[in-house]
Length: 106
Image (cartoon, rainbow, N blue to C red; front, side):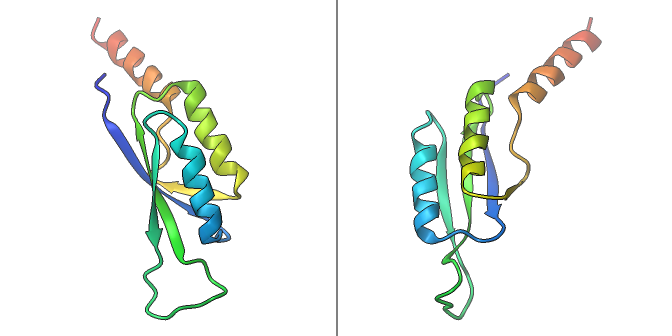
């Protein structure tokens, strides 16, 4: 299976602060070939009480190992409740799909 980069939008509920998003991005950047890109809030009015960040793009390889996949999930969960669209790609699911495909072709 080719190593295609994956991208998903991660959003925290409740919002986390800009400083926490930056810290989170720094933690994720320590994982080989994983990166985070902050998405700035697009509200026309500034609200000091609200986060300046609306979410982040998480970039990762499709061939991310199961252990690194779980590490990414642990890091994301450390900062609170999060959702991803599309859902964070699970390497175990990929292995299952490949094995099912191979079984059906034999």
